[in-house]
Length: 282
Image 1 (cartoon, rainbow, N blue to C red):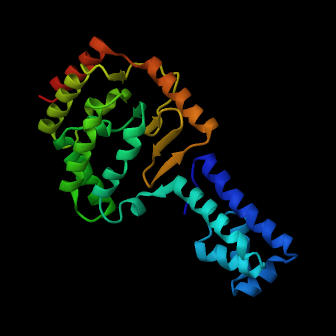
Image 2 (cartoon, rainbow, N blue to C red; image 1 turned 90 degrees about the vertical axis):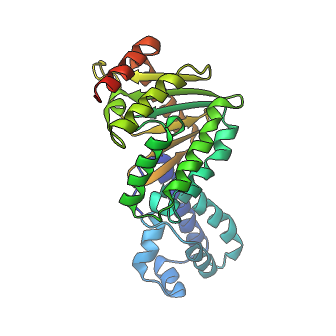
Image 3 (cartoon, rainbow, N blue to C red; image 1 turned 135 degrees about the vertical axis):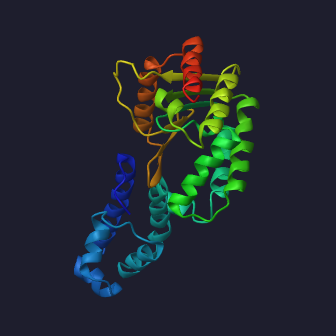
């Protein structure tokens, strides 16, 4: 698995690796001793101790058994799984298709009071029309070669979007102006999507800001990210989803969102840019 760009993920993996080393040393064993007792190459022991390779559950059990510390295996497996869940490859999340992933977000959405979402590349998921979602999810399924359940995934995404009209939630959403110009699904689909943005801006729970092309950048463009209340952030990379819960890192995303919000325009100025994007489709 490639190294995560999130330091909290790296720190969590390092903590597991350090614990493996401590268990070995507490047992007065060398790396060669562990390799011999487990039947591994010494290089594997080194990779596990240096957080180069994350351990599987069986690796942890074998390590603890070799060190006569079987009672420590369960807690270490839990810590390893927690670290692994911070950086999850899309191919793992989408191995059975896209529908289940769309549905999996619903509990998080329902318990979140304040959503802060910054999108640099596409319209935020909860603001997508059926046509836009179908075009986008279709291209994702094709690129990642996932099982084709696009119709079901689109229905699930549209269904979960009802949250913007239900419950006690507030939504602060920011998009780069380029998002309004990228043609996802063709001109007709984009016209419908942009028209929907104009209508959803009227909802009292929704604040939609557009960062103009002409903004004097005091904050550079970042990958799309979402912050749920002030306790969790999710970052979307090409290959994986990064889940951030370390308070210091969540604070960095909140700070970035604040800086982006200062660059954005709202209300009539934002509507003017959306309308200009619609006109440009003709």
